[in-house]
Image 1 (cartoon, rainbow, N blue to C red):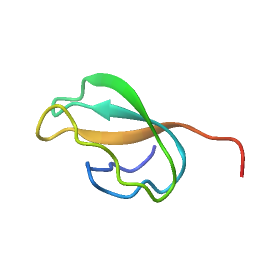
Image 2: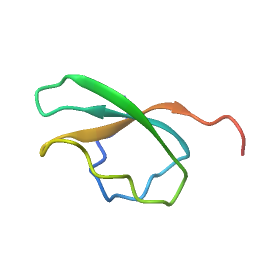
Image 3: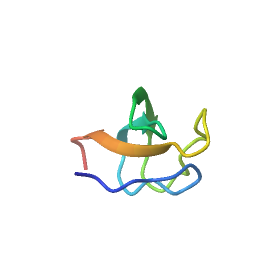
Image 4: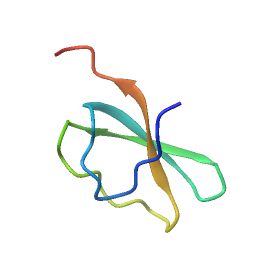
Length: 57
């Protein structure tokens, strides 16, 4: 399982990050590239989880 990433944290890898709500519900996915900060989440207490890393190097 990927580690929990909060908004504003630089993305460790490029790929699709899914928003996980404060009670565990799954939200939409956001695309981010390595090193760029993750965008704000719609609710406080939400976090991101890497679900589909890019396959290119």
